[in-house]
Image (cartoon, rainbow, N blue to C red):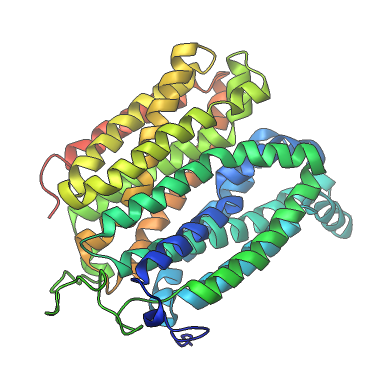
Length: 427
């Protein structure tokens, strides 16, 4: 059941357009999803490998299972968000994410207990426990909490959607890029188990309260006009495609594949960043140092791209995204070299900033707001599925070929193929 828009306060009583409150709330929603994103898991990988006794490929397989399980659930989640509203969905997602992260802080012990109960090795029990917990982690964090936050923002703006997204992207890109550094310090202070436990409690309490107090469905349900007081009084005519109609367009697949490739490869790079750096002779701290310059480039790109989106549309930004992906993927195979580290930060940073903007702007611009969560759920399914394949693909390259480079070189060709479909107008 949808929560009444006037509880705990009426958005129309705010002395400015409530959409700007929505921007802040949606931004916090995406930032609080970080524990369910690969950025949030990456620095916990090596401690968890040591605690569970799993190999890197086996651990990557649990992540693959969890992420694919999440992807399978997302289309239904998008439909339910459209039916029951963004606020209930965000509250449930925040509580679920917090509980799963808390369980992950005890995952090795849960695995040992399951193994003992079934007469299996502790590592086998840990594999099963992690696979189940990663389904919950990816579905609640990377999936629902992210989808519902971006869907809400997309519904509150039309002519200023890019501008609103640029503000959101400024903070989201910065938060995602610095999260590994913050979590690494948190682990150093409290240990991996204590860090995950504290993060889980923080997400469950803080984000569920933010969602209850500040999330709202759309301006119309709150008695407001789209884009605020300076929006035209006449009824705005906009596209209103259903999910079925959107999935039959070239535009949907070109945008979705471009985003899915970024999700796939950046997830793999982030997941294995410590080992990827070690392949180039870097320490853990030196490998993680990729993220601060990445943050600067990503944040700057996201801010500028959001403003440009209202002026140039989706296609030019998509083409730049695809080019930046190719550069970033090749450079990531050479993190041990100064030029490789610099180009990786620039390429991945530009792609990351554009990814954040296009995730919010592209679908409502192309297909309208009415069925946005359902369409977004379908697109997010591909993005999440891509992110499932990235860590395993890089792990197999490392295990079978002795290096991550072949997988990264191969991945760099894929955006160029997608770009062929974006050469013609998307509308």
